[in-house]
Image (tube, rainbow, N blue to C red; front, side):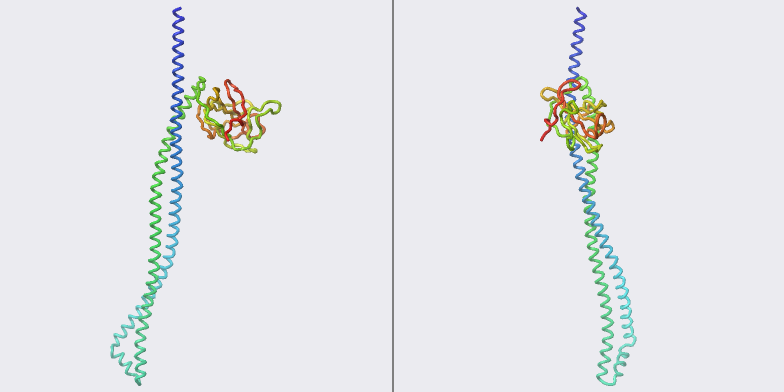
Length: 360
Protein backbone atom coordinates (compact mmCIF):
# COMPACT_ATOMS: atom_id res chain seq x y z
CA UNK A 1 0.00 0.00 0.00
CA UNK A 2 2.80 2.37 0.93
CA UNK A 3 4.63 1.51 -2.33
CA UNK A 4 1.46 2.21 -4.31
CA UNK A 5 1.17 5.66 -2.68
CA UNK A 6 4.81 6.38 -3.48
CA UNK A 7 4.29 5.37 -7.14
CA UNK A 8 1.14 7.53 -7.41
CA UNK A 9 2.93 10.46 -5.79
CA UNK A 10 5.91 10.10 -8.14
CA UNK A 11 3.62 9.78 -11.16
CA UNK A 12 1.70 12.93 -10.16
CA UNK A 13 5.00 14.76 -9.68
CA UNK A 14 6.18 13.71 -13.15
CA UNK A 15 2.85 14.79 -14.72
CA UNK A 16 2.95 18.15 -12.92
CA UNK A 17 6.57 18.61 -13.98
CA UNK A 18 5.77 17.66 -17.59
CA UNK A 19 2.80 20.02 -17.57
CA UNK A 20 5.01 22.80 -16.23
CA UNK A 21 7.64 22.11 -18.91
CA UNK A 22 5.03 22.08 -21.68
CA UNK A 23 3.44 25.23 -20.32
CA UNK A 24 6.88 26.80 -20.09
CA UNK A 25 7.63 25.79 -23.68
CA UNK A 26 4.33 27.25 -24.88
CA UNK A 27 5.13 30.54 -23.13
CA UNK A 28 8.70 30.47 -24.42
CA UNK A 29 7.49 29.78 -27.95
CA UNK A 30 5.11 32.72 -27.75
CA UNK A 31 7.84 35.04 -26.45
CA UNK A 32 10.36 33.82 -29.05
CA UNK A 33 7.75 34.16 -31.80
CA UNK A 34 7.03 37.75 -30.71
CA UNK A 35 10.76 38.55 -30.58
CA UNK A 36 11.23 36.99 -34.01
CA UNK A 37 8.36 39.07 -35.39
CA UNK A 38 9.87 42.25 -33.95
CA UNK A 39 13.30 41.37 -35.39
CA UNK A 40 11.76 40.73 -38.81
CA UNK A 41 9.90 44.04 -38.69
CA UNK A 42 13.16 45.84 -37.85
CA UNK A 43 14.91 43.89 -40.58
CA UNK A 44 12.22 44.90 -43.07
CA UNK A 45 12.65 48.58 -42.16
CA UNK A 46 16.44 48.36 -42.48
CA UNK A 47 16.11 46.61 -45.86
CA UNK A 48 13.73 49.36 -47.02
CA UNK A 49 16.28 51.94 -45.85
CA UNK A 50 19.05 50.15 -47.77
CA UNK A 51 16.89 49.98 -50.91
CA UNK A 52 16.07 53.68 -50.60
CA UNK A 53 19.74 54.47 -49.95
CA UNK A 54 20.86 52.50 -53.00
CA UNK A 55 18.38 54.40 -55.18
CA UNK A 56 19.70 57.70 -53.81
CA UNK A 57 23.28 56.55 -54.43
CA UNK A 58 22.33 55.72 -58.00
CA UNK A 59 20.81 59.20 -58.41
CA UNK A 60 23.95 60.97 -57.15
CA UNK A 61 26.15 58.67 -59.22
CA UNK A 62 24.14 59.61 -62.34
CA UNK A 63 24.45 63.30 -61.43
CA UNK A 64 28.25 62.99 -61.07
CA UNK A 65 28.47 61.15 -64.37
CA UNK A 66 26.36 63.81 -66.11
CA UNK A 67 28.44 66.66 -64.62
CA UNK A 68 31.66 64.91 -65.62
CA UNK A 69 30.38 64.59 -69.19
CA UNK A 70 29.68 68.34 -69.20
CA UNK A 71 33.19 69.00 -67.86
CA UNK A 72 34.70 66.79 -70.59
CA UNK A 73 32.63 68.60 -73.22
CA UNK A 74 33.70 72.06 -71.98
CA UNK A 75 37.31 70.93 -71.63
CA UNK A 76 37.28 69.77 -75.25
CA UNK A 77 36.14 73.24 -76.27
CA UNK A 78 38.83 74.79 -74.05
CA UNK A 79 41.45 72.67 -75.83
CA UNK A 80 40.12 73.82 -79.22
CA UNK A 81 40.15 77.49 -78.17
CA UNK A 82 43.63 77.09 -76.67
CA UNK A 83 44.83 76.22 -80.18
CA UNK A 84 43.13 79.39 -81.47
CA UNK A 85 44.77 81.36 -78.66
CA UNK A 86 48.21 80.04 -79.55
CA UNK A 87 47.68 81.05 -83.19
CA UNK A 88 46.44 84.51 -82.13
CA UNK A 89 49.41 84.99 -79.78
CA UNK A 90 51.86 84.01 -82.52
CA UNK A 91 50.31 86.55 -84.89
CA UNK A 92 50.35 89.19 -82.14
CA UNK A 93 54.07 88.57 -81.56
CA UNK A 94 54.72 88.81 -85.31
CA UNK A 95 52.90 92.13 -85.65
CA UNK A 96 54.51 93.44 -82.48
CA UNK A 97 57.89 92.74 -84.08
CA UNK A 98 56.83 94.54 -87.27
CA UNK A 99 55.60 97.53 -85.30
CA UNK A 100 58.77 97.60 -83.20
CA UNK A 101 60.83 97.44 -86.41
CA UNK A 102 58.90 100.38 -87.82
CA UNK A 103 59.49 102.42 -84.69
CA UNK A 104 63.17 101.55 -84.80
CA UNK A 105 63.38 102.69 -88.41
CA UNK A 106 61.68 105.97 -87.54
CA UNK A 107 64.00 106.43 -84.60
CA UNK A 108 67.14 105.55 -86.58
CA UNK A 109 66.21 107.86 -89.46
CA UNK A 110 65.17 110.54 -86.97
CA UNK A 111 63.36 113.70 -87.84
CA UNK A 112 66.03 114.58 -90.45
CA UNK A 113 65.30 111.41 -92.36
CA UNK A 114 61.54 112.00 -92.36
CA UNK A 115 62.01 115.67 -93.19
CA UNK A 116 64.37 114.75 -96.03
CA UNK A 117 61.71 112.46 -97.44
CA UNK A 118 59.13 115.20 -97.16
CA UNK A 119 61.35 118.03 -98.54
CA UNK A 120 62.12 116.01 -101.65
CA UNK A 121 58.56 116.77 -102.73
CA UNK A 122 58.37 118.92 -105.92
CA UNK A 123 55.40 120.88 -104.67
CA UNK A 124 53.24 121.44 -101.61
CA UNK A 125 50.60 118.98 -102.74
CA UNK A 126 53.18 116.20 -103.08
CA UNK A 127 54.53 117.23 -99.66
CA UNK A 128 51.10 116.65 -98.10
CA UNK A 129 50.76 113.30 -99.88
CA UNK A 130 54.18 112.16 -98.61
CA UNK A 131 53.37 113.35 -95.11
CA UNK A 132 50.09 111.43 -95.14
CA UNK A 133 51.87 108.30 -96.37
CA UNK A 134 54.33 108.41 -93.46
CA UNK A 135 51.50 108.92 -91.01
CA UNK A 136 49.37 106.15 -92.53
CA UNK A 137 52.22 103.65 -92.48
CA UNK A 138 52.71 104.17 -88.77
CA UNK A 139 48.97 104.18 -88.12
CA UNK A 140 48.42 100.99 -90.16
CA UNK A 141 51.14 99.12 -88.32
CA UNK A 142 49.67 100.20 -84.99
CA UNK A 143 46.10 99.30 -86.04
CA UNK A 144 47.18 95.82 -87.19
CA UNK A 145 48.95 95.26 -83.89
CA UNK A 146 45.86 96.37 -81.93
CA UNK A 147 43.70 94.07 -84.04
CA UNK A 148 45.89 91.09 -83.18
CA UNK A 149 45.88 92.02 -79.50
CA UNK A 150 42.09 92.25 -79.59
CA UNK A 151 41.84 88.80 -81.25
CA UNK A 152 44.05 87.32 -78.53
CA UNK A 153 41.93 88.98 -75.83
CA UNK A 154 38.68 87.64 -77.36
CA UNK A 155 40.06 84.10 -77.46
CA UNK A 156 41.18 84.47 -73.84
CA UNK A 157 37.68 85.66 -72.94
CA UNK A 158 36.20 82.47 -74.46
CA UNK A 159 38.66 80.37 -72.47
CA UNK A 160 37.75 82.22 -69.25
CA UNK A 161 34.02 81.71 -69.91
CA UNK A 162 34.54 77.99 -70.53
CA UNK A 163 36.66 77.68 -67.39
CA UNK A 164 33.82 79.26 -65.39
CA UNK A 165 31.45 76.58 -66.77
CA UNK A 166 33.99 73.85 -65.96
CA UNK A 167 34.35 75.18 -62.41
CA UNK A 168 30.57 75.28 -62.02
CA UNK A 169 30.22 71.65 -63.10
CA UNK A 170 33.15 70.69 -60.88
CA UNK A 171 31.28 72.16 -57.92
CA UNK A 172 28.24 70.07 -58.89
CA UNK A 173 30.46 66.96 -58.95
CA UNK A 174 31.86 67.81 -55.51
CA UNK A 175 28.36 68.49 -54.17
CA UNK A 176 27.04 65.17 -55.51
CA UNK A 177 30.14 63.35 -54.24
CA UNK A 178 29.66 64.76 -50.71
CA UNK A 179 25.99 63.69 -50.75
CA UNK A 180 26.98 60.29 -52.20
CA UNK A 181 29.55 59.72 -49.42
CA UNK A 182 27.02 60.72 -46.76
CA UNK A 183 24.40 58.25 -48.05
CA UNK A 184 27.09 55.59 -48.45
CA UNK A 185 27.90 55.84 -44.73
CA UNK A 186 24.21 55.41 -43.89
CA UNK A 187 23.95 52.37 -46.18
CA UNK A 188 27.09 50.85 -44.60
CA UNK A 189 25.59 51.28 -41.12
CA UNK A 190 22.29 49.80 -42.33
CA UNK A 191 24.10 46.79 -43.81
CA UNK A 192 25.95 46.28 -40.54
CA UNK A 193 22.64 46.51 -38.66
CA UNK A 194 21.03 44.09 -41.12
CA UNK A 195 23.83 41.58 -40.54
CA UNK A 196 23.31 41.89 -36.79
CA UNK A 197 19.53 41.44 -37.14
CA UNK A 198 20.06 38.46 -39.46
CA UNK A 199 22.16 36.80 -36.77
CA UNK A 200 19.49 37.49 -34.15
CA UNK A 201 16.77 36.18 -36.50
CA UNK A 202 18.72 32.99 -37.21
CA UNK A 203 19.31 32.39 -33.48
CA UNK A 204 15.66 32.99 -32.59
CA UNK A 205 14.44 30.95 -35.53
CA UNK A 206 16.66 27.99 -34.55
CA UNK A 207 15.39 28.21 -30.96
CA UNK A 208 11.76 28.52 -32.09
CA UNK A 209 12.10 25.51 -34.41
CA UNK A 210 13.44 23.47 -31.49
CA UNK A 211 10.58 24.57 -29.20
CA UNK A 212 7.97 24.03 -31.94
CA UNK A 213 9.27 20.52 -32.55
CA UNK A 214 8.85 19.69 -28.87
CA UNK A 215 5.32 21.11 -28.88
CA UNK A 216 4.47 19.23 -32.09
CA UNK A 217 5.72 15.92 -30.69
CA UNK A 218 3.81 16.48 -27.43
CA UNK A 219 0.64 17.57 -29.26
CA UNK A 220 0.68 20.88 -27.38
CA UNK A 221 1.32 23.25 -30.32
CA UNK A 222 -1.66 25.60 -30.07
CA UNK A 223 -2.48 29.15 -31.05
CA UNK A 224 -5.42 30.93 -32.64
CA UNK A 225 -6.14 30.65 -36.37
CA UNK A 226 -5.83 34.01 -38.16
CA UNK A 227 -7.48 33.68 -41.57
CA UNK A 228 -8.55 34.10 -44.23
CA UNK A 229 -6.26 32.11 -46.49
CA UNK A 230 -4.66 33.56 -49.56
CA UNK A 231 -4.13 31.52 -52.71
CA UNK A 232 -0.64 30.01 -52.61
CA UNK A 233 -0.13 30.53 -56.31
CA UNK A 234 -1.32 33.05 -58.91
CA UNK A 235 -2.10 30.42 -61.56
CA UNK A 236 -5.57 29.14 -62.55
CA UNK A 237 -7.29 26.28 -60.71
CA UNK A 238 -7.40 23.31 -63.08
CA UNK A 239 -9.20 20.81 -60.83
CA UNK A 240 -11.60 21.51 -57.98
CA UNK A 241 -12.71 19.84 -54.74
CA UNK A 242 -14.90 17.10 -56.21
CA UNK A 243 -15.19 13.45 -57.17
CA UNK A 244 -12.68 12.57 -59.83
CA UNK A 245 -11.88 9.25 -61.44
CA UNK A 246 -14.33 7.51 -59.12
CA UNK A 247 -12.96 8.90 -55.85
CA UNK A 248 -12.92 12.24 -54.01
CA UNK A 249 -10.28 14.78 -54.98
CA UNK A 250 -9.58 16.15 -51.50
CA UNK A 251 -8.07 19.42 -52.58
CA UNK A 252 -7.68 21.76 -55.54
CA UNK A 253 -4.98 21.88 -58.22
CA UNK A 254 -3.21 24.97 -59.52
CA UNK A 255 -1.93 24.26 -63.04
CA UNK A 256 1.23 26.02 -64.23
CA UNK A 257 0.89 25.32 -67.96
CA UNK A 258 3.74 22.80 -67.94
CA UNK A 259 6.16 25.07 -66.06
CA UNK A 260 8.21 23.80 -63.12
CA UNK A 261 10.15 25.70 -60.43
CA UNK A 262 7.40 28.32 -60.07
CA UNK A 263 7.47 29.46 -56.40
CA UNK A 264 4.39 29.03 -54.21
CA UNK A 265 3.67 30.45 -50.77
CA UNK A 266 2.15 29.65 -47.39
CA UNK A 267 -1.58 30.37 -47.45
CA UNK A 268 -1.54 31.85 -43.91
CA UNK A 269 0.70 32.32 -40.87
CA UNK A 270 1.58 29.04 -39.21
CA UNK A 271 4.14 26.38 -38.28
CA UNK A 272 5.46 23.66 -40.59
CA UNK A 273 4.55 20.33 -38.96
CA UNK A 274 5.35 18.00 -41.87
CA UNK A 275 7.87 18.06 -44.70
CA UNK A 276 8.37 14.54 -45.98
CA UNK A 277 8.05 12.07 -48.79
CA UNK A 278 4.50 10.72 -49.11
CA UNK A 279 3.09 8.19 -51.56
CA UNK A 280 0.96 9.88 -54.19
CA UNK A 281 1.78 13.38 -52.93
CA UNK A 282 5.44 13.05 -53.94
CA UNK A 283 6.69 15.44 -51.29
CA UNK A 284 4.18 16.69 -48.74
CA UNK A 285 4.40 19.93 -46.75
CA UNK A 286 1.83 20.44 -43.97
CA UNK A 287 1.39 23.75 -42.13
CA UNK A 288 -0.57 24.15 -38.88
CA UNK A 289 -2.39 27.49 -38.79
CA UNK A 290 -3.93 27.35 -35.30
CA UNK A 291 -7.24 26.40 -33.67
CA UNK A 292 -10.35 26.91 -35.80
CA UNK A 293 -13.62 26.29 -33.95
CA UNK A 294 -11.72 24.29 -31.34
CA UNK A 295 -10.04 22.09 -33.97
CA UNK A 296 -6.58 22.28 -35.53
CA UNK A 297 -6.51 23.87 -39.00
CA UNK A 298 -3.96 22.63 -41.57
CA UNK A 299 -3.01 23.33 -45.18
CA UNK A 300 -1.16 20.81 -47.32
CA UNK A 301 1.03 21.30 -50.42
CA UNK A 302 2.07 18.43 -52.71
CA UNK A 303 4.18 17.34 -55.71
CA UNK A 304 7.44 19.23 -55.10
CA UNK A 305 10.77 17.49 -55.23
CA UNK A 306 12.84 17.49 -51.99
CA UNK A 307 15.50 19.87 -53.38
CA UNK A 308 12.80 22.48 -54.11
CA UNK A 309 11.55 22.77 -50.53
CA UNK A 310 12.48 26.02 -48.72
CA UNK A 311 11.17 25.23 -45.20
CA UNK A 312 11.71 22.65 -42.46
CA UNK A 313 9.68 21.08 -39.66
CA UNK A 314 9.14 23.42 -36.72
CA UNK A 315 9.71 26.57 -38.78
CA UNK A 316 7.36 29.51 -38.38
CA UNK A 317 6.10 30.81 -41.73
CA UNK A 318 4.18 33.94 -42.65
CA UNK A 319 1.32 34.33 -45.10
CA UNK A 320 2.83 34.82 -48.56
CA UNK A 321 6.25 33.41 -47.61
CA UNK A 322 7.72 31.14 -50.30
CA UNK A 323 7.82 27.55 -49.04
CA UNK A 324 8.65 25.53 -52.17
CA UNK A 325 8.59 25.36 -55.98
CA UNK A 326 6.27 23.63 -58.43
CA UNK A 327 7.30 20.09 -59.27
CA UNK A 328 5.82 16.97 -60.85
CA UNK A 329 6.64 14.46 -58.13
CA UNK A 330 4.33 11.58 -57.11
CA UNK A 331 1.05 10.68 -58.83
CA UNK A 332 0.82 13.68 -61.11
CA UNK A 333 -0.38 14.28 -64.65
CA UNK A 334 1.90 17.27 -65.09
CA UNK A 335 3.54 20.13 -63.15
CA UNK A 336 1.04 21.59 -60.67
CA UNK A 337 0.39 22.33 -56.99
CA UNK A 338 -2.08 20.11 -55.16
CA UNK A 339 -3.46 22.17 -52.24
CA UNK A 340 -5.59 20.91 -49.35
CA UNK A 341 -7.33 22.28 -46.27
CA UNK A 342 -7.80 19.80 -43.41
CA UNK A 343 -9.48 20.48 -40.07
CA UNK A 344 -9.47 18.11 -37.12
CA UNK A 345 -7.35 15.66 -35.16
CA UNK A 346 -5.50 12.54 -36.19
CA UNK A 347 -3.06 11.61 -38.95
CA UNK A 348 -5.53 12.52 -41.67
CA UNK A 349 -8.06 15.15 -40.55
CA UNK A 350 -11.21 15.83 -42.57
CA UNK A 351 -10.62 17.49 -45.94
CA UNK A 352 -12.51 20.73 -46.64
CA UNK A 353 -13.07 22.71 -49.81
CA UNK A 354 -10.25 25.31 -49.82
CA UNK A 355 -12.36 27.74 -51.87
CA UNK A 356 -14.53 28.42 -48.79
CA UNK A 357 -11.53 29.72 -46.84
CA UNK A 358 -9.91 32.13 -49.30
CA UNK A 359 -10.27 35.85 -48.68
CA UNK A 360 -11.77 38.24 -51.21
